[in-house]
Length: 390
Ligand SMILES: [Zn+2]
Image 1 (cartoon, rainbow, N blue to C red):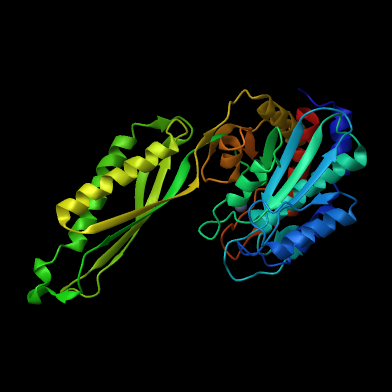
Image 2 (tube, rainbow, N blue to C red; image 1 turned 120 degrees about the vertical axis):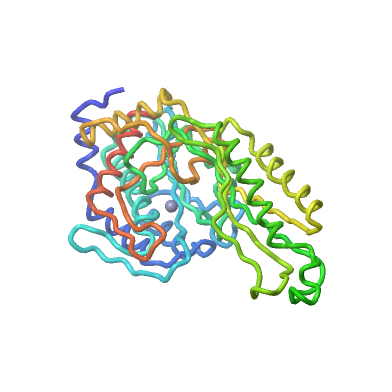
């Protein structure tokens, strides 16, 4: 649908930059490394309560930091658009908030407290103008997002407890395309070990099961499979793959070690079932262990499953009209290069999810920077998507 020009202008004008930035600064100002987002969640709940919203605090499986949820109704029956964000940040030294030359900096400014503040502001603009024609906004914010400290399970808990809309927007720092597809990701850890102690090469070491060669055999086997998997490809999302980025083992050059660890990734497309992908990984290890006389234990830690939504889904159309009404053009359809909670909303919640946030930089570093005008733009796009979708 096209959003009437006067309504679009009124909603956009209702986005209050000062109020948005005040919220963002308050959220960035409270340290919240993953698993410790209780204080910032409490602060967000207070901000929303002071604003007159009715706030719920579902535990969603993590009582140490209950999530924050607000439902804002238009009063007329329609669809529910959810805005969902994570309040936790990666474990790096805390950087306090600052706003200088139109740029917000500090821990979580880009990933993703700035985005959450924009979503909150979108909800306020809709409330203040009463221009949401029908349906509801559901705002949810939570902990346990960032790997490896979090496992995404609080989003599972929210979905299972019914805190899920008919579609969801997630304000992660992705804005160059409209991601309708993304690969799943698992973090792989493979531990190869043998009985006994480390021993000198010339004092029996050479006769021990060779841990390093077993590691090489594992890498070679996964390289073979990686080549095979490259046949499974998606025009936007790319290929399925195995990748190893870390190897640890051995102590000195002429000693037979007892242990070696490999770490890497497996990425897959939504046509592959997660259980099959895991089973394929498990099945590869034991034949190598048997052939080499070593023990091999593999862990397959799922970050998020793969997802795909229809490019002609009405939600995509609603988002595009909101985006065009704000920026003057449509956003090209593309793939999500990383995994996030949007994958979970599609796969577990069964609803379309669009990750769209500010053009921010420095995520997962101590130099997060997000332009204030980008946060305002995101708030406008979110509010107008609700007008078009609900
Ligand atoms: Zn994030």
